Image (tube, rainbow, N blue to C red; front, side, top):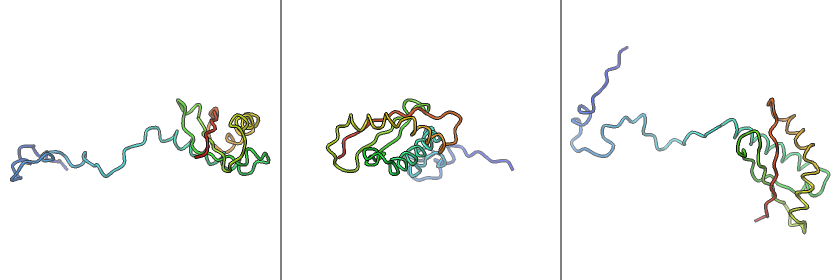
Length: 134
């Protein structure tokens, strides 16, 4: 089947008044569709890491880790390293450095659990940032 290409002049002659969208192909003008996400696989990896860390923090015997909530996980700057932002779930009188030191003590266990949950050849490095609760 051979498609006949319609000329712009034929399209414009079919309308009584020429508007801003006349003569444009409607296949390429779709404002209602969401834009394509860049690096979809990296975002999938971050979601898997966030889910795994949330479960690990909830099952932790350490009370400081047990009261942490994963806020976001983003690639930093590539998916070889990810930045995990956590906040406390309850108002504790703990310093942010104390929370970070407990996370650093459990870093190797957290990374090995993430490696078991995520199917990748190389597990990304986990960088943690503790944010204040809003």
